[in-house]
Image (cartoon, rainbow, N blue to C red; front, top):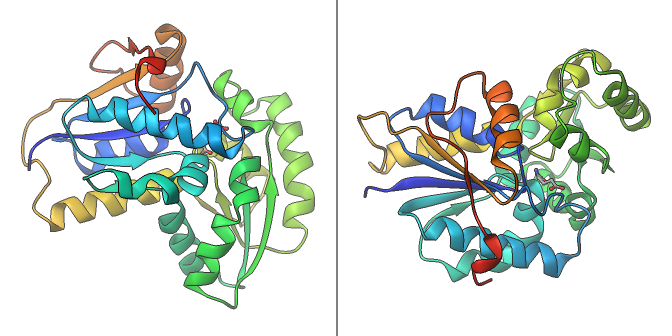
Length: 270
Ligand code: DGL
């Protein structure tokens, strides 16, 4: 089956999945939507998150996509269980793949999770981790200040403000001795270097990258992966394309092959 892979998030975070998908499947076209006009999702109510998710999926379906990756912990945990059955194509969230990677990585059975208030409030990570191994001890914390910092480009190593915020969040959370930390919002792996400095020896789990590897393996197994071509990554956003392009290229580490385009996402029916 031909067609692109559709990926969405509220903003930059889903690029953590896009970067890995592109590495795994360079011949695949990726259509990315970052809902930068409505970020953050993670401090919003359930009905709003479901509505936004449905509009994002409908936008991706307006392109020829063969599968969708919900590269957003918030939409994966709050909306995906509600909406998955409405569409006739594979739609993959990030929770299960991240939980499985954490359950496999931990040596002492203690896993910590950070995420948006909506993701942590949903209990989805705890449930997924316990489904992998009921003996795991799980500590979680909502860390709502991190998404605005990332969206404002404050993810460079050495950023003093972001470091201070991370210290506040991670100090109490990791005091329980977790050896594995799920960066449970796809924006957070952009802070990986800063987190690693504050959590030496702790294994960091990147949900977008874990999911991208699992999706790539599934597409290959099912014979649905493209064998050749360099179609690249097409990015769409619901706010200013220029600032997204700048931060996206900084994060991905390569120039985008197509100009970032603007979408009126409210035109898409929920
Ligand atoms: N990157 C998303 C997540 O994984 C959304 C963050 C937000 O918009 O609050 O939860």
